Image (cartoon, rainbow, N blue to C red):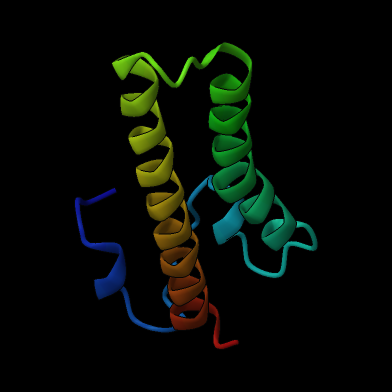
Length: 91
């Protein structure tokens, strides 16, 4: 497979990537996208902060910033996955 930008691929010429959210007409592709890309990282970070965090320590504050950035990038990733699915699969 050549190294190409995913967004440069034309509609209908979608490669067969082994990444479930990019499967064409997969019944659970969107569920897998929301759970694995969006929900699991956010819930895991929140659980770690709630269980082991002490707000008087600077490491917990750094962890909170990391958790917020993880949530932002997870949302951005889901938006980009939806954009690729629309571009490739004519939804």
